[in-house]
Amino acid sequence: MTSPTPSTPASLAPSPAEPLRHQVLAALAQHRIATTSQLRRMLRPDGTRQLLSRVLNKLRSDGFADYTLLPDANRSRTHAWYLTQEGSRLTRDLPVLRGRPPYSITSTTAASLKTPHTLTVVRAHLSFAADARRLGHEHGPWDWNPEVSHSIGEGERVVADAVMYYTAVEREHRRKLRAFVEVDRTTMSSERLAVKLIEYARLFQYEAPPVGRRRQAATGPSWLRWYPVFPRVLFVLTGASRARLGHRMSDLQAMVAQHPLVAALAREVPLGAAVLEDLEQLGPGQAVWVPLTGGKHRPWTDL
Image (cartoon, rainbow, N blue to C red; front, side):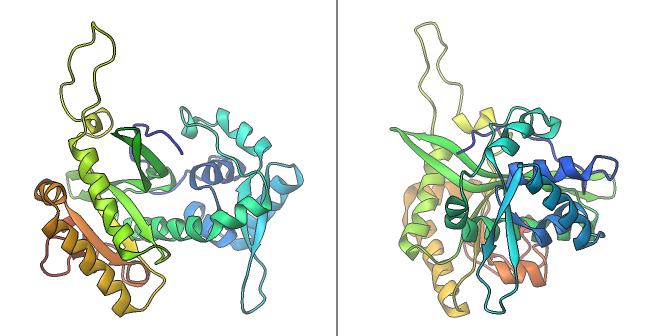
C-alpha cells in the first residue's frame, strides 16, 4: 500500500516534450497495471496505438516491463502491462514520482490476480480525465493516486482505491476538488461495501495520539496533514445489472441514514455513487451521481 503524499494537480496531459518512454514508466508505476489502449488514452489521447506499442515492446525487451494476457471471448490479444522489479527501481529517479515508494509486480501470476480490479480503477480515472479535457479542467495521470492508506486508530487502516485531485476551471475561478474513490465490481457483499462508509467516518474523526512527552497535544484530525478539506467520497459501481447496482446504492444510503458516525460525516462531506458505464458514456460531470443523503441525480461536483 502507498502512503498518502501531498499532490498538486498536474496539467491536462503530460507534455509531449517529455520522453514517452519516461511517461509510460511513470504511468505504470503510478497506476500499477494498464492496457495499451488505456496508456494511449492516458498519455497520448490523439496518438496511435502503434506508437505506444513500440515503446512498451522496447521496455519489455529491456526488462523494465512485462504483460499478462487478458481473457477475451473474441480471442483478441489484449496486453495488461506492469513494471518489473528492475523497471520499478528505475522509476525512483523520475521527478513526477519523487517521494513515492516504488511498486512492482513480481510475476505474471501476481499480475493476473490484481488485473481485473486495477484495470477497472484505471477505467474510472480515464472517464474523469476525458471529461476534464472536454470541459477545459485539469486532471491528468498524476492526479490519481491509487491505493492510499490512512490510519483510523486501533491498528486499523482505511485504504481508498484512489485519491483524486481535480481542478475545475471556470473563467477566472479555479476550484480545487479532491475525492476518495471506491470502485466496486460487485465482488463483495453490499453490506461490506457500505461498511467502507464507517471507515471513512472514523478517518474523519480520528486524531493520532501525540508521540513523546514533549510533543504538544494533537491540534485536529489527522487527515489535515494531507488535505485542506476532507475529500468527498465517491463510489463507482459496475459488474451487475442496473437493478442490483441500484440496490447497492440504496444500501449505501441506508448506512448514511442509520449509522450516527456516517450521518455526521454526511453533514460535512459530499457522498455519492454512480455507475461506471454512465461515467464512460455520459461523463462524470453529468447528472449521473446519486447523493447518498438522498435527492436527485447530479454532477459529482455538485454533490
